[in-house]
Image: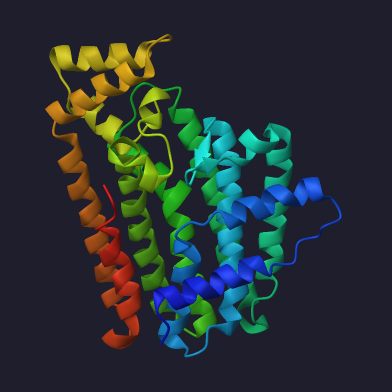
Length: 324
């Protein structure tokens, strides 16, 4: 059985050795830069761990796992453009270094590199694996569209928010787990348990990501704190605050959101103050823990011994202890 650090090392080495056509350096330099600036590699590690539950070798899953990671990074390059974000993992974003047009084009190439990685899937499961990935990829784009649509709407429901993050974030984690299971030889029911494990983990992950934007350390998290508040991004914190606030508190929150000109630090301070008044932080942490518990329950249903699932269990357990 492999450990998480061992599998992350396999992924890092595979990313370094990834074949990228070097004919146009201006096209490939942003790709190599973005893939080299690190990250948790959570999705590909989950793919390999899910494979390892059923198979002692993960060789056949390495390139598909890399495909998941390259696709994920492609979405981040484009997300940073749409969010006008200047930092990613505490380093300049691609469009900040090379401009929007270059970032869009290099991001597009990453999507095709991901497809090429998936074509290296063992032939007996290629169709199921690629179908699982392709469905998730389309859903991620739908989730991003909903996210952009919600920016233009003052109020969305709790359910609408959860559906959006399920599509934008959770389905790719779900697909990562299922793809690993498919390559490892898991049966249909076990693959669905793995899918639900990843989906619930992804929901928890995004909810905690929302928390970290407000309460995280920029030196650890790699983003400017409070960026979501400045842009009125619909996060679980804002959705909960708009649902729970009443009277003068609700009026104040709506006024701050409606401001066209403002001091960013002052806006962040005002909104965070309202979050504290409404106990939003602790309630959101509880919600994240509920999804982590659901993910663990899904994993327990997978029909292998506990010892083979231990590393994947630790992924869920460690998520609940992310830096806050």
